[in-house]
Length: 158
Figure 1: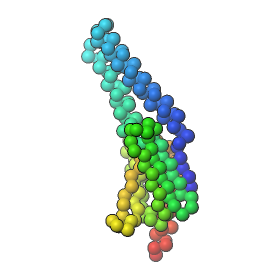
Figure 2: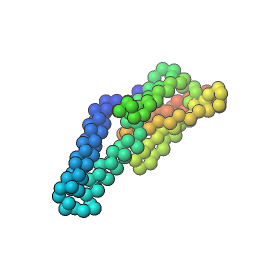
Figure 3: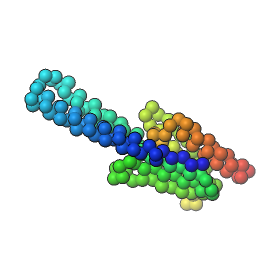
Figure 4: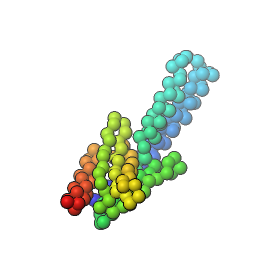
């Protein structure tokens, strides 16, 4: 099964640009308010605080682009940011038989996928991916595909 939200990258770029323009406009309005008009008083700081909070919320949700491929004998995960220099992209590929378990953590604004993979050295390794920008249907499809792989692995062990 293949799952990707790469086609939504232009939407995320638009949102990022809109938030940056809102921040620039907020700084401009704040400076005009402070040094020219001085009508609002302390409320003028909201022109700075609100855009910064929205921008932080957008980037703290994690990497925007998530790709998953379980066709064939390997599982392939890719997780990257729309702005390449903000964070290092993740790319992991391993055989299906090494998948031990997975867990999807669903918090109000943040969704994470934790995958446990068996390894020779440590016994198991936990891999973390940010899936906050996936829809509910995409998350359910991902859950279904990973469950099939884990179930098949458990049957092969017995």
